[in-house]
Image 1 (cartoon, rainbow, N blue to C red):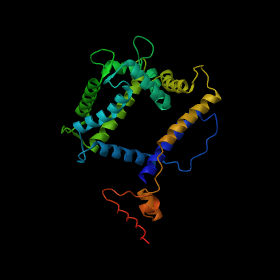
Image 2: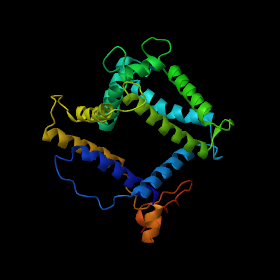
Image 3: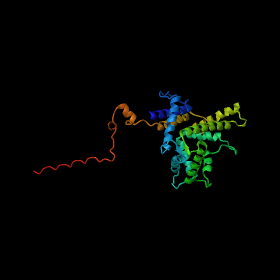
Image 4: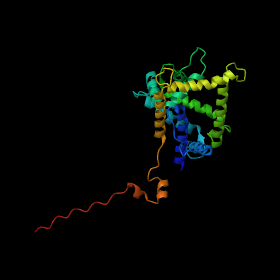
Length: 297
């Protein structure tokens, strides 16, 4: 049931993205569309699964060390994948190749980066490069490369800062209540940041022009993502291509239940061995009886 709910939530997100290019061809309604309550439950279930996967000692709380270990596993995997020569150092070229590979496969990531570039002010004029900003923050020795030690230190510092703000009872642990409160605080901060970014004259209010611009900038970022050949126009082919790419991404996230999953076994009333071969672990199959030689005549 949980897997089914999770895949329904992913379908809902995918359908929302597909509407960006919906003028190219009509889309049929999905009969299994979740409602708001279903989507909220899916989000809560996913959060609980993530919490339990980080809470290694299963005490119902996440310590700083558990959070750091989880971050090292997640980010470390990306780092070593991008480190093509395996020397423990990520050069600008390796970082760029990894970034291009991710963005080529994930249109939504391209949109988010475009959104950051359009929304982040740059005193020198133009839009800053998020990758260059990240390199500057992490590259503590300013050698133009990222060492594994630098990445680990940045993750540890970030998590320590998170606990300093979100661990409200100062016990060095994050309970589910504190995690939920931290998420609420992050949403509030994001809303305030969005308001401040739109309030160009810093008068504490949004004019009609400022409000319109706050809507136009994200739309321009979406347009830039869809405009594959950068000619300033969206063709039917580009819209259809965007639909196809996003649809493929959604399909790759859907994992169907195996025929011998507990749910399917319960529903069918069959035993695991009736669906698929069940291996024997730690047991030895009986030896076959030796062939009997024919009696001499």
